[in-house]
Structures are given as C-alpha cells and as structure tokens.
Amino acid sequence: MHTLKIWTKGLLPLAVVGLAACGGGDDPFLPPLGEDEVVFAASLGINLAAMEKIPLGIWITDEVVGDGALVIDSVVVDAVIQGWIPDGTQFEDGIGQWLTAIGAVIPGFDGGVIGMRVGGIRKFVVPPELGFGTRPPSGVPVNSWLIFRVQVTGVLDPTPQGSLVSGAVTSVTAR
Image 1 (cartoon, rainbow, N blue to C red):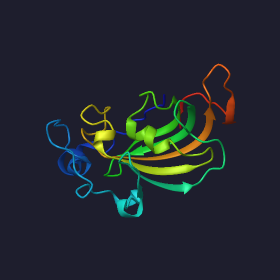
Image 2: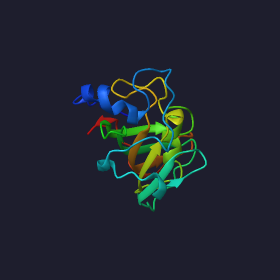
Image 3: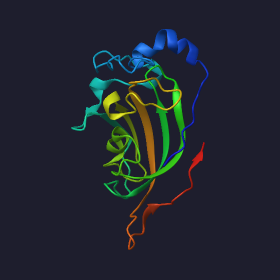
C-alpha cells in the first residue's frame, strides 16, 4: 500500500490539450494511445527507444543498480515512489509499502519493481492496459500511460519465518 498524492494544479488545460497525449481523457470508450502515438513531456526525460522493453510490456531504465536484497514475487517492498502522466503532471510522491504479485498495485507497477535490488532507482513506463486503464484515481485521465521513478529502500519476507532482508520497514507517509 502506498500513499497517493493528487496534484490538481493545471488540470483544466489538460482537458483541452493534454489528455490526448495521456490516452483519451475521461471517455472510457476512446482507445488508449499506442507506443508510437504517446507524447511525453521533455521534463520527464522519456525516450522509449532508449529504454529496455521487458516481456510484460513495460519499458525500464535503471538510474542506479542496487546491491541489496532482490525484489521477487511475494515479498514486502518499501520504496520511495514518484509518478507522472505523460504531460508531466505528477500524481504521486511518497513512501510506500506493498506485498508484490498479489494484485495490491497495478500490474505494470509490480512488473517495474520486480528484479530491482535494495538501493536501486528505476524509472519505468507503464502502458494503459497494465496501469489504471478505464478506472484511474482522481486526477489521472482514463487510459493514461504512467511514468514511475522508484527507489527500493527495503525488502521483507512476509512468511512467519521471514525476516527483514535489507533496509528498514517504514510507515506509509507522504513526502
């Protein structure tokens, strides 16, 4: 589970111009934009051609490769999380904790974090079908592409015999 901070400043201009870049605005019947159609704000530094597309269908790039415990299925992850839509509007900025691979977060988010190590920082791009799709939170347009930057700070094995593998388990708070 992680906090979700909604930024509302500037959403009105989005309704007129920017929603097309995100994938369709508030009309759930409009198809999402494809990878060759989506336009990312320059401030995000996203170039899909320069990123690795993993089999799940998301694009990743490691800014820092961690050297701590590995994030795998069914572990509790602690992380610093930032999220944007393609026009550069930030919709998330906080510290989160969740159990991987059980549907606690959108599939593209889990997929972007699996394989990271504690201490690592990764930026990844999630297409609409692996993101919020037609049921986004407030402030995120329907069928939006999502951009995340995640720093893994801890991994915990949640089984009864499990132990803190690396880092510290923190409470969920907004930054």
